[in-house]
Length: 427
Image (cartoon, rainbow, N blue to C red; front, side):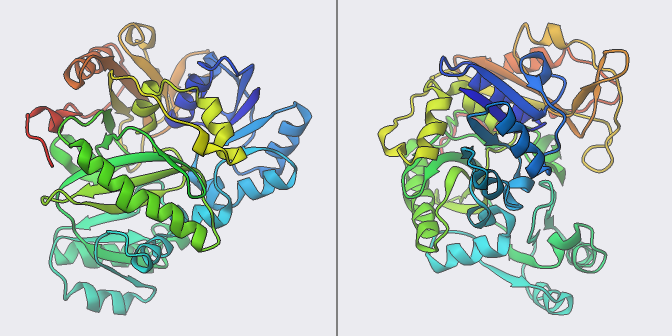
């Protein structure tokens, strides 16, 4: 098949790489892609927001499947537009993608169907929100309702920080229309866990779990980011907890979406918190592959990825069983100077070939300059994925490769996967 992947980040580079492992794939094209993707697939300069342009290109060039990577086009209805042109699309339609596009919708859905999540209230008036937050225990979590590039969640440690966050979101418009409504929810302690699941209505095929590291600095300090690193498997979280999460959260959510007349077809991403009591609760849902979770999950997938995509699109997922490699994977994100606020761009990156001797190198924010050099072009620049027989070996491979890379102001966390290596098992 001829497959078109939409997007330009590390997730999309991983998708392209994974699809190219398939014997069923003739060609992969990416729109718009990045410098790393361009080394293994044709990249076409079409913006992810140009739905008609994507449809026209796909029809003219005989694309047989479109795989949508980012959240914004899904929330805006790219699947509906492409399907109206007769194209086959992997990714939920606009109604189903609202599970990520609106945190208010998502929280109300979980409450209605009694799916475990943090206690919360929603607000569209800043004075009412201020009155409520002043009565709550700290820390408190404040979330913009809409999409905000992974940065619309603030964990306020003090009341003044909470009040400033409400001012930023609801009055100053820091996240535009996304912050006009907000969710205020209780802060949950525990270990985070991410589970990606292929869904074609009520049928769920869950992937192996991963754990992300959101804060910018070691020890989970500093502002939240889109994710500074991931690893899989999670030796410190028992299989029984993973199975409980699938049984009590992911499968009921898929059924709830069908009951709401919004059947979900695509990849459903569950961001979970494992409480100190060993109970999984929902932090968030995404309507697409996570980034950087995809970078450690797909390299472990033994089942042909294209066959899974086709099963979801065709509604035959119940006929598919996923097989997984026992090898561990650890992804370390290398970010640009200034990330997550105002990242520098245009810095020349060296050492990519040397890094690739030790690990998979997935590009995120990169491009080639006029002289053909690979340069930084975004906040999260590279995802370096080490693999090994266990998490420690994969971690060592990843950091060995990271040491080979160099560009001005590069920053990365040095403690990715450490939480799993203390020998304490939850559940």
